[in-house]
Length: 542
Image 1 (cartoon, helix red, strand yellow):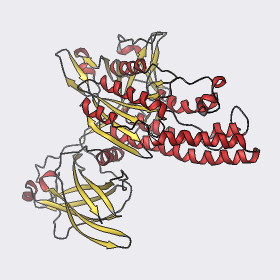
Image 2 (tube, helix red, strand yellow):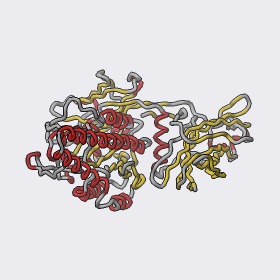
Image 3 (cartoon, one colour):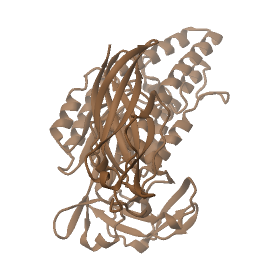
Image 4 (cartoon, one colour):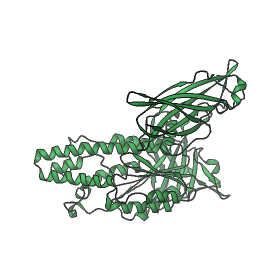
């Protein structure tokens, strides 16, 4: 992660807005005492490390010199070190903390580590028989949260839906879980689709069997690919959090080779042929790299628990209970995303309570190691290995680290404000809706954004003062569908005396939208200081 006092503007995907500064608004700037800060940047790669003995118990007494970190196979110094025990660091480690390890004042001799839990429910995969158990597991998990912990819940229902924004209130989290339907149509539809495909394949001839399997393969591949992409997008909600970041996945797994098990069934083989075409490994790799870049630890729980052995499974049993290959294929993605981020995959167990206890133990007792990236080659992606000198211990930590620039981090901040009620208040933008007009099959809506001149960082410029503001515009409709994010930059030049007041600087944009009800979200970034402000406005297009 990078901690920086001066941040460059971000470039986001081109989108649906046309923008222009209002005529007559002079370009502005604060006087020479504008508060400009020199660029001070500390780039640290933080690695959370869980060390357990052969019985699975935490080993909490290792010193810094017991650890060795290799980046791209080369040893590097452990520049920062703290032993986190029961969610807190001791006073003896205060001077060794990474700049990114945010702690909250507590007792005199210890301070708790801020923890953020993103609970991601694959609602579309949970079959009715196991939904009640999954919901019960979530309730138990929430019950274990400390008062200082923060969590949000996101459900995948053909697209990610935020059920509750970031909160430390258990009652709000439990209310969101209790509102989950007892019988989700997505999971039922997925089960019935698989059963129908199996029935048709078992009754068909050889050619018809393979054609039916290919149809199923194409459908499941598109669905699985989108699910992983949605998971990757949801990671942005953790992007601006500091401290311990946890991404918990509750799912029935997904096929790493979508449709492969059905094709093997059609071919009357135990495993698919080598000519099998579909694979979501690239999408899984992007998810893992993104999680590691954000320094988030992923834990996965397979809601299926124990399934009957293939030999005991009936004709109407799910494919994962009838085929060892199918079960392993749907588990391997959950296993990889956990293992490669330093987390744990909870598979093939009906003891959910013990699984949750293990997860909370891992996020409460671990070692926080930090490496100053000035000592690491500036490659985009690095292979990371952590070892300890004491033999016989199991070490879990993230296995890769991907450097991301400031533009990507600002994208995460903007994306989070679009999907949740999170806001930034360093600047005070105001959104005002202007007139609208029809153009083709869409409506052209005028939007004015006002920012006080005193909010921006002005720099001397030939007797005047100049500042820049970067505007990000996006909208989300009542169905949860979002527009692309548009970015535009404006410069303002003022007399030095004009930069200290609340004079509004105005940016006007034209937004093209289809009919519907929207929430417009505008973020304004002061690129010299990295400060940001968020404004929202309801918008109805008739």
